[in-house]
Image (cartoon, rainbow, N blue to C red; front, side, top):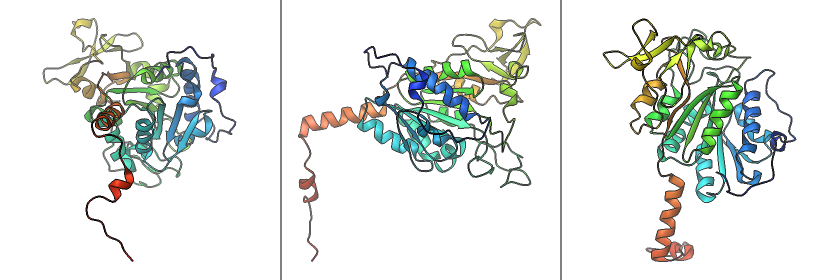
Length: 341
């Protein structure tokens, strides 16, 4: 949220704290931290009006490494704490930092209802498909069959797709990027920061210790071009190193990959519409998963709706105007009361 007042120009260094960054060497978290420090100076928001709220996990150390206000809360409850903060201090820009385990297991309830309510929070979900902090157990996003410390014979769980969950909750802004695609990640974070309402950015993040290479298909040069579609509003779904492939809907309304120039033109392809009120297209995109389909990267959905925090404060103002300021002592002593001796 911009203040509308031109502030002294800040730099990424102004957002770096004096704390030693304690992540494993080559962890993808470093890249996300670096891009966040690049994005914040462009937002024209005072440092004292920026807050990072995290839960528990490797990613949740993030607030220590930012020279802003921050809260390191409890497992899965960052959305609840952040909601309370945003409602009580609506002038703040509040970022929620979470991981696939923190947000989607113990925190699934809070995550879901934050999005459903459209609280004006910016949520970065670090997805490495593993529990890294507790040393390599499988997480809600781990692929079926994955062998981990807690699934030595392979996971039998069907994994969650975070963006599908978000769109099912009617989230107003849903996007995906990958840790090493620096330019793309910065662009997506800037879009999220500018959005009014719950803005979810899933970042594919490499845990090189416990799940190394999980997202090579989306990050390695020579692979990502063939395996990912970079979404642009109003543009057809085209991908490939030579941009010679696309996605269209078949007769059953399901996505299928086709080659351009073989009786298929760009006009035959599916066109992206991030502003569609109907979430059907965004849900379809969220469920396009590698290796069956190329995976969408970028903004899947970005629509405008009233925010929860504004509605709460408007309701409080209206009730106060109608009934006057509340009296807590009077409330405690109203109705049936008794004294215990």
